[in-house]
Image 1 (cartoon, rainbow, N blue to C red):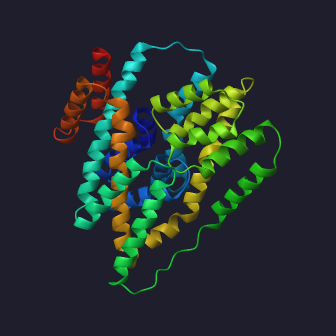
Image 2: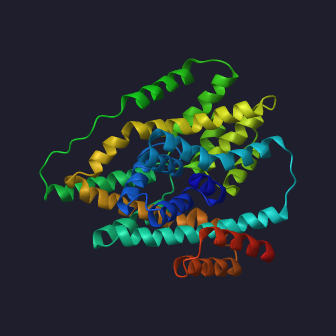
Image 3: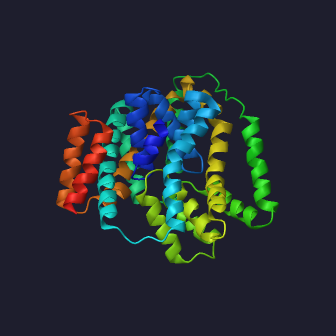
Length: 368
């Protein structure tokens, strides 16, 4: 139910989702400590797939095992799945009230991410070196917004941290073996995607490959899917992409829309297959290597490396606060005024998120 509520209200893309998770699971429910949450974010940056959904999946797994992980995934993904499926099967005209409400929710996403950046910076950027790592990573991401920029930055931060900590610690780092079952399922799914034939297999193959190869979240998956699904025209892709950004929850549910549109005779089946296939690789890889990452993160020699990685993750969130969240939401002075008022209400007056969501929607409809 917690993730279902988030799936209905988490607008603004992966960075905003991480801000919502920070507020709910670290500050309010205290399911995770700040450093544990930062570890999950850093780990998700190493894996292909939807980073915010992987973090949510991992939070569910930490809370209640594989059942909790699946509950987190279905709860967070279901609202956007339903909305994009309906968009694919039901012709609809543009609704100005809906557009205004969506703008209000995108403005609220600016508030949430700004609050998350400040909270995480207080925890992970307390020293000169970590502050430099944070600002440097934000600068590099803004200047070089390429697919592998974040991964390269994290690897670089880890190397610098290990070089520094090596002077202080000399013990050997022992990494736990990866889990066999999810790794086996991943390899089996790869074989199915390669050799199976038919519409169902081809749909699974295209979206499974996209989920396996995309680093950087939903904004990056569009170009890869365009090359893998040549039968779609540009208008279909752009409509689905715009809708995926406008609805709450993960942007990877773009696969829901594309799967349903590609097979109008049986849209629900193919929407489900496409959605399942695009999320599957990232989740299997997370289950395979999660314990290995945790063992590495808890080692004393890796502490300095982890500190720089965490600071770099804050820098990623800072960069995302500007592009795409701020630039796609704040277009005029009244928008910025609403953001500042909302930030005061959230940060200093401690108002409930649900109340603020309703207030932002109402105010945006009245203004626009």
